[in-house]
Image (cartoon, rainbow, N blue to C red):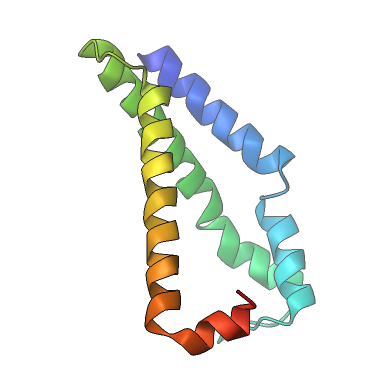
Length: 117
């Protein structure tokens, strides 16, 4: 169990770096887009300091959550795996997003014309 959580955290941190989601890359993107953080200078280093407080802890937390979901499914002998549960939740979330999108288009016909539907 400890090995799975440790490997999940290491993979999550590696993913943040490899995918370009690290604070320095995100700070550059935010600086290029012209975003300002009140009370901070608008240079990438200031953004990087603020983002580094959140990106790595959230990557670690989300990796631990995914590992725990997988462990719980394995411990209780769920018929599907932890990844199967995550996949099912993801599909249900997509269905929900699609239904709310369609309901918004029905409720606001002007939105339908703006989106070119």
